Image 1 (tube, rainbow, N blue to C red):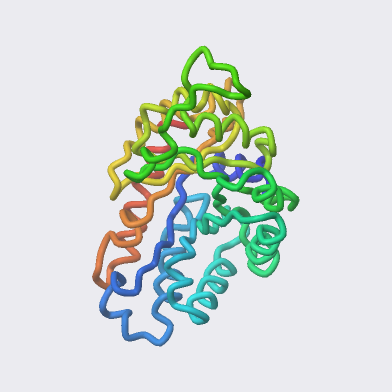
Image 2: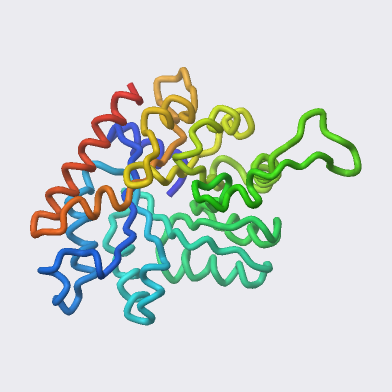
Length: 282
């Protein structure tokens, strides 16, 4: 999916909601757990219920990989079930030497029909480059995450580059944003910024004003949709809003109920997010 197609979906539906399919068999409703195809049935019902209220789905691959071959099969069937009108993300956080990353890219962009994959940038440009070489596909690079461990590296200050001191100390995550943004374009490169890092969004937009941001952490993790939307949305005066955000909610939607009404409750929560997002787009 191209940037323009994604923007058109956001403007048409008046939402920038992404539904996270972090499907854990132990957490799905008990009446489904005995089903021989429980995981896929759950995903299918969630997708059917939320389709009209979101523009994207994010599959956290760890929940599927943990199940071995069967999990991979469910993941492939799930991504194929999602219609092409919706942006499909593999939350896989891949990134390795070039020839290995090329195989990861092939796995998720060719063997499976994902539009995007999350990528860890630690190993540098050659580890990210293979994901940027597919037309209409995206690399979503980790920028500033919400986890406690972000303080271990991402929020560390760098005081020099090329032997010269900066006028202002630079956080490692800022260096990542500045450097990685030069490897691709706003048409094939997004960044992950956690919803609980709202105080950093204004600064982040000053560094990467045109790139889409994938923002997880709304809902169960406590991120504020209002703060994110006000501080991180691309400011645009044209008649077609660029938006520049995909805000992900996973547990708050898919586990809204542990009973037989789980799909209906998921629909209502997605609808609520969509209604709020519409006010920020207008």
